[in-house]
Amino acid sequence: MRSLITAAWLILLAFILVPVAVDYTTGVSYNRIGIIMELEAESDEIQIIEEEHQGNKMLMAFNTENDYGVAVFSCVKEHYRYEEGLMSNNKDYIDVNLDVGWDIYQYRVSESGIELMRIRENEGIWKTYADVACMIAAATLALCIFRGLRKRSKRKEKKRRRRKDKE
Figure 1 (cartoon, rainbow, N blue to C red):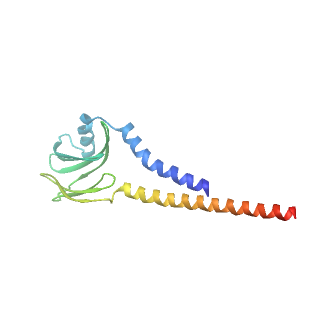
Figure 2 (cartoon, one colour; figure 1 turned 135 degrees about the horizontal axis):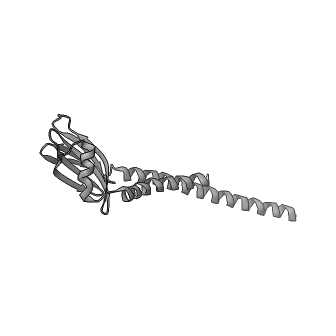
Figure 3 (cartoon, rainbow, N blue to C red; figure 1 turned 45 degrees about the horizontal axis):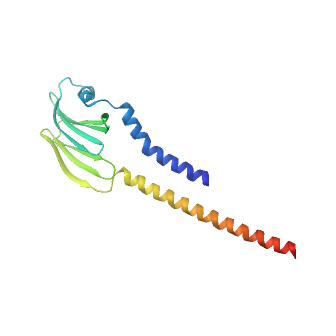
């Protein structure tokens, strides 16, 4: 049981640290973002309309020759890593949920720019991680209490046996 809880803590830690390490090691500098967007949009001419920074995420709206789209980047220091991109495909707008940790920012991207629709507080991925950490902490505490009570009862049992052996 003890090794299972240790493994759970290590897995949770990996879920938190690996994305940060990947963003830092595979990210590109800000001036190369346009090249990535051109490759993903399969277009040679991209005009950036607007960009929005929230926490460790950046949302960038852009126009191509005959369409518009949005690209989402995660950023650590000066390293930007492309996460996803959406093209409008002749729709009036694109709805984008930007998960920045504790909160989720809901944007509506149109041909004219980015509009913040609402902020869903405490619904992001960090809340999920915090819930999992609380469950693991409760299991760890229960295991410690159980082991302490078990050791205590074993000590009492040993004392009883010693008393019986002396008599």
